[in-house]
Image (cartoon, rainbow, N blue to C red; front, side):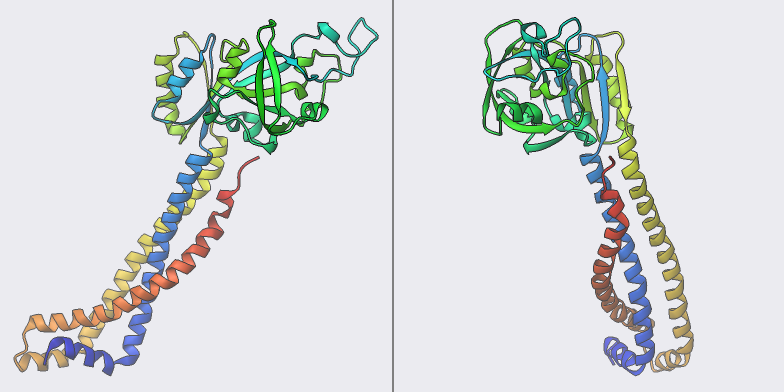
Length: 367
């Protein structure tokens, strides 16, 4: 008789044992597959954390230029970067906010013509990397922030109080000129942001009021008279890449000394739990694989011992040994393949729910 057919007859004659073996196979395969799926989920979550959260490195140096920042931002470990280029500017055709506290030595309120430029313009490349926006103290209430694609465009993001006083909204234009009285620029408002900071309790020039802040692209800030970069923020994938970025900064920045600060707290708060879940999933895989191999090996050995008489009869009838081995292989495969299919269905659904439940905390962002 063909050994494949004989394997089928043997499985049918031992339905109860076949069902038990199928159940054991299914449980082991489900646990293994679930562990692998959970490992894959943690790997994806960690990659998302590296891309979305990352590690922010702040670089400050005397006479730091936008060209140096662009060179450093184009290096391998940098995912995103943002220089901060401050400038003072004058408003043309709209009114900046004025301090409500009397100026020392004067009785009337406001600063009048001697109040200075009036506007605090900050040239940026990517406003999302600014610390107040990253941690949520400042947020966009209408429109959008400054993006890398705004380079070369004359756009601005204005503070809510300044926008309300002058009736400005997304799509409106404002005219802003250099502090020295040069030609004004016409900027299109692409966003409005809210700064929770209150006005100082003492008199300050208009430029120092938080409501008079404008964010513009770096090129626009330079047209308004900005020269040096106050600081630059570089987002990298992991803390381990900070050393590489520091070495590149030493070669690019000509200053003998510069301030290099790594802020990886948010990254570690998110990645550490994810890595612990991944390590736990890996441990599950190894334990289940070892225990499953031992259990299945014992079951097969016990079945062979119980069927010694059957095997002896078949050998006495002239059946070749390789056919007996083939029969047992077919029997095991006939049970294992359906078990793997069942495990694929159960493991996919179960691991997805378990992974979502375990990794939910990893999706929360620190504030």
